[in-house]
Each structure stands twice: as C-alpha cells, then as structure tokens.
Amino acid sequence: MNPSKKPQQSFRLGATHLHAVLRVDQIRTDTLTQLVQHWADPDARDEVIAALDELAAVMQGAAREGELDAAIEQVEDTAGMDTAQVEVPIPDARRLHDELAAVMRRLDRFNPKRLAPAQPEGSAA
Image 1 (cartoon, rainbow, N blue to C red):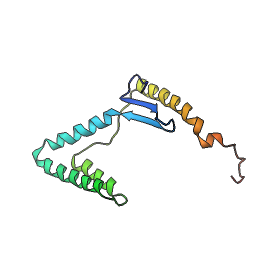
Image 2: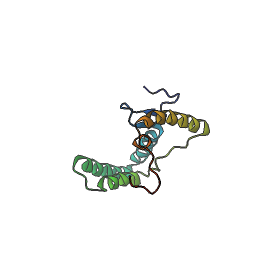
Image 3: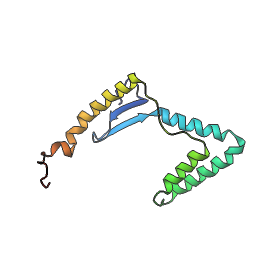
Image 4: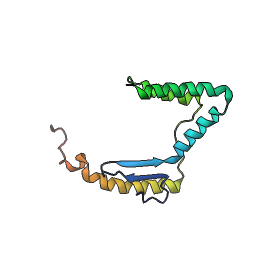
C-alpha cells in the first residue's frame, strides 16, 4: 500500500524494506503520448515501427553492452521524445521530501555504512 496523498508521484518503502520505490506516472503518460503523436503521422509511422521492431529484437535476444540503450535512444529520437523528466512544484517537492525521509528512516536500519563503527581517518578498514 502506498500511503501518499498523491500515489502517482510518490516515494514508498519497497516490499522487502531494503529499497525505496519512486513512482512517477507522468513520465509514462508523457512517453506514450509523445510516441503516439509521431505514430499518428503517416510519414513517421514506418520509422517509428522500425525502431520499435529493432528494440523488440534486442529485448528478445542477449543484448551486447550498450545495445539496449542504443535501441531505446533510437526509438526516442525517431518518435521525437523529450527527456523523461517532470517539473515538481514546491508543495509536491516538500511532500516527496517528507516521504523520502520516512523511507530513509526505515532503510537506514539496514545501511551497512551506518551500522559499521566509524574508522579513524587514515586507518585501514
């Protein structure tokens, strides 16, 4: 369960309590909207389909290093997609800060750096 007042843009503790989960639905919405805008253009559709087919082929096989990133970048470039980012107004930034702080209080219980005794500077660990 996500206790956030705005779960579509939120931090929560992961199921194992060993990681945080950041949810930003707006990025997915923007991605699909931008993809479909170019898909609707008959002149660009074939290029977008070819880029998606190439990405699918990479996903189905054993991708070489950097191959998946290159295929994704090709789809983004072909579909004219913007950077995956979201503007966060001050009230939401404060809420996200509080949510992340609550998650960090739980995660820090398992943080090896926090649990290890401090080493004097210059000494070997």
